[in-house]
Structure formats: C-alpha cells, structure tokens
Amino acid sequence: MRFVFYNHGALDQTKGCLLVANHPTLLDVVLLISRLPQADCIIKKELMFNPFLKAVVRWAGYIPNDGGTSVVQEAIDKVRRGRKVIIFPEGTRSTRRGLNSFTAGFAHIAVRAHCLIVPLFIHCFPSALTKEDGWFTVPRQRPVLGITVGTVVDPAVLYKTSDPVPVAVRKTTAAVEKYFQEKVDYETRNSFGI
Image 1: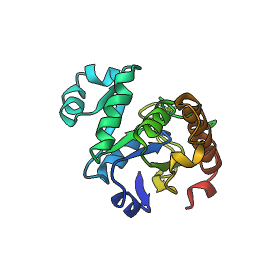
Image 2: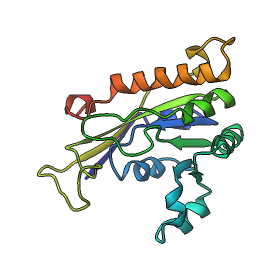
Image 3: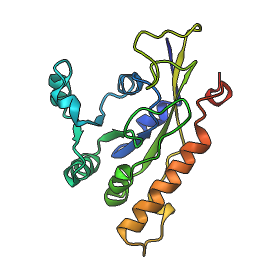
Image 4: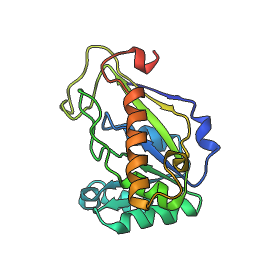
C-alpha cells in the first residue's frame, strides 16, 4: 500500500479543532496519527477492552465512545485546551456503496465548543481493508490510501445565532454530511486525484 497525505501542512495551522473524517479502511486512523504530533481520538469503547490495544489507547488518553454526554464534554475540554480531536462521524467504516449517515456527536462538540471543523477526505483506490473485505484480501493493483485536508468549516456560519443548540447541531450535521457526500466517491479513481 502507498500512503499519500495532501495538504497536510494545513493541519499545522489549526489548534483546538475537530478533525472530521470519513472511514473507508482499517488504516485510516494509523495514517492520520502518523502525521499529527498530537491528536486525541474518539474510539469505539470496545477498544478499551481489546487485549492487544487497551494499554495503548488508555495510555494515549483516547476518548471511548460510550454513547453518553461525557464523550462530548471530554472532547470539548480537549478542544478548549488547544488539542486536535479526531472523530469519524459515520461511527464505523464506510461501505463500498458510499458513506454511512453521520451521527450528530461531532456537531454537538463543534457547536458547544465553538471550534472549527477540519474535514479530512480519505480515499483508497483500489478498495482495500474495507468493511466488506477480509484482512487477507489483496487487490490485484497496489492500493493507494490518501487523505486530503478540506476547507476548514466554521460551524457558526451553518446556523443562526438565535437557533437553539439542538437546531444548530442538526444544521451542522446536515451541512457537513452533505459536504462529504459531494467530495467523497469510493467508486472512481478521479475523486482520489491520482
């Protein structure tokens, strides 16, 4: 597999932000973290009990997604301290058919913390290590896994200041999901830019 990170210098210019990414492969977070000297991840709570990973994710201070409000508050606290928090709003890996619907957790964090959202578009061509593929399924062509840093989004422009928080969260979720749907296409090489 070859790894490519487009426009990663833009990540150095942002602090105290939410890194929102689609999730096509098992290696997405590995590639992301390899380019970030500091990042906190919101992870599946099951990883906290995985015999191979639990020590690492606890030592790293990652946030387990137990579905509660404590996840949002912990992420807000980290963002307000100037940290970058990675979240995959699909909740699980995408399918070859495209993106899964976005959950609103990232929008709750962005709206309540008043922080910027940095979209990260992840592509893998040809498809590999997806939800549908087995671990040892190898494509005929060497896959390229790439991440493109998108245009930073200020969630405050996506809703009215008079909107109650739940309305602001819904509008932010819908707008960011639409942005990802326009930019991510798992079917064609052209969307990857190679």
